[in-house]
Amino acid sequence: MKNKLFLALGILLIVSLACSFSGNNNSGLTNDEIIATSVAATRESETEAAPVDPPVDPTVEPDYLLPQSLYYRAESSPEIFQVWRLERDGVTITQITNEIVSVGNYTVNPVNGRVAYIVDNQIFLIDADGTNRMMLIDGGPVDESSNVFIYLERIRTVSWSPDGNILAYGRGGLNFYNFTTGLSELLIPSETIDYGGGSIGPQALYDPSTWSPDGSQIIVSVAWLEGGTLSIYTPSTDTNLVLGYGITCCDYDWSQAGDFIVVGSPVLGLIESGLWRYDAVTGAETILLPTEALDGTYNFAGWPKELPNGDLVFFYHNMPESGDYDPPLTMVHTAADGITGLFQVRPESWENYEALWDDAGVMAILVQPAPGPLSWPRTGAIVLVDTLGNPVLPLVPQGFDLQWGP
Image 1: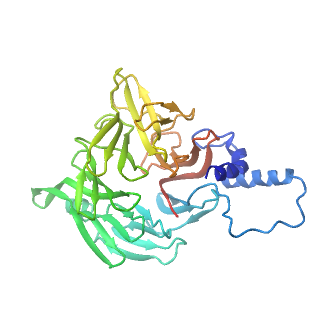
Image 2: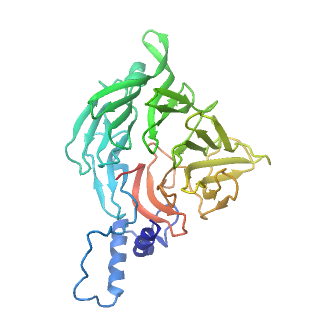
Image 3: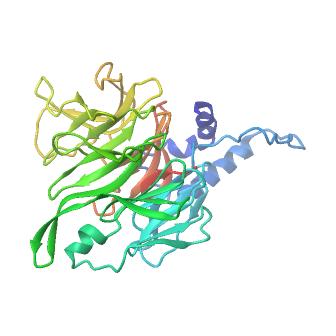
């Protein structure tokens, strides 16, 4: 994968040398225009090519910039967000959905690229080329004035299993839709508090998040009235293992073998900052970077990723004061314990925004905000940042909600 990255970057480095970490440029051209101009200039400067191109070996995989296609949400018109896909060449963009209102949470089938997404409290399916749109689940009418709708009837999140056979979704708790049987089942009902008079409040709302690499377990987001935590649900035993003793947040990922998850928190206030590891079978917690270090300083860690050799890469900041902070972070590499051999991989500081690592932990796709006050959704420039020291590469002018596709 590293060789592919170097080869693809060789064409595109021209456009990234003048880019700051935010992905902005002052040329007045779009990213596509810059790339097209740069590639054309490179070709003109080459010596005369052979009159006949060598034959293409169909058994050799082409060199790509990205290890997989990249899905994201972005505006199709002002304040209307759709699902888009950036192909592995890092240039070709395809709009997948075309709804009259914004698409909510979505998930990509890792086998065939089919997309499941939420619109108007319904789950729709659409093929990877944007055709064959169909409704799968109808969650009922939208009623934002009803607490019952907000906490029990709203479809909140969707997540596709690695084999593409199960669609997990949150509506009144954790549900599985089985594509083999065509049946949907509520597995963990959400828990609410009845205030009387038809008014309820959340006690524990369960929504699916990230599946383990082998699909045997799934991380579940648990929302309380204030704050929340994570749990790990095992379908084969119908057990839900709640993690942590307080608020467990915010950025997390499975280990390469799926035997634990690593959780980072880059914010401090209502929740604690730091870095933790949780055993996927027992739920045992290991503190890697405590909120307050022994020297009295404070640790902030986001977007952790375990490497194939067991080391960790993540985004990190240490500061001498506590308080309600959301500091810029730098990319670091450590041993498996989160502290031994800690060194800064790149010089840039990044906003705590959104990051998506590739499986090898060699590159991260980041969403970076434009200057000015933040708003929701937190959209921004999508850029590629690697651990090899190559210049930051702008990919898409604006987007958010990153996911890998096949």
